[in-house]
Image (cartoon, rainbow, N blue to C red; front, top):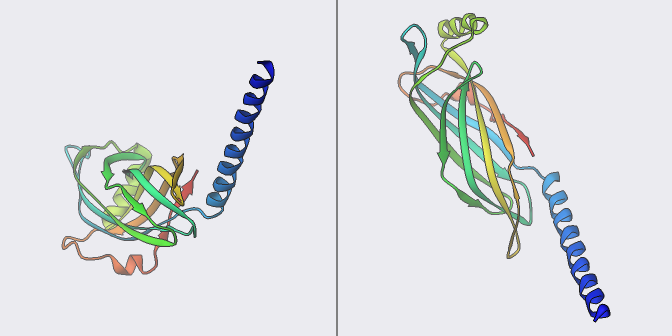
Length: 193
């Protein structure tokens, strides 16, 4: 009986080591080929403050491309939470549509943020806001919190939760037309695992 227990324990440990090593190899493969997020275009058709500059009214559309550079690993984007930020203040959070991305492909994603929100700009940022208001070009940040599952062959393994940060300038435009001159080339975002 003790030999059977010892043999069973050795088999369990052996499978655990093999599984752990497999996960490590896949993780290293995936880390060396991080997903690539880019802002490809943005439209800002409303961006003004009311009520003593505390109530922000906004309408922002942001277009992103997401590149999966991995040759063998597909990615399930289970949760895509996008938060827009102006002068260090969050002003909207949206959940974008989950999807599956096959290996070596680029997917396009659009986030639409519109509404009104209480946003209090710090005193040291008011002059920046006034300058941006005069120029008609605003500095916006979008932060993503993702929940991903990696698919290798038939197996969905490893859940990762990277954070993505994108900072860009977008001109105010009543018509909602593309901001092409500003986004002639895509603006890269920082991906942090």
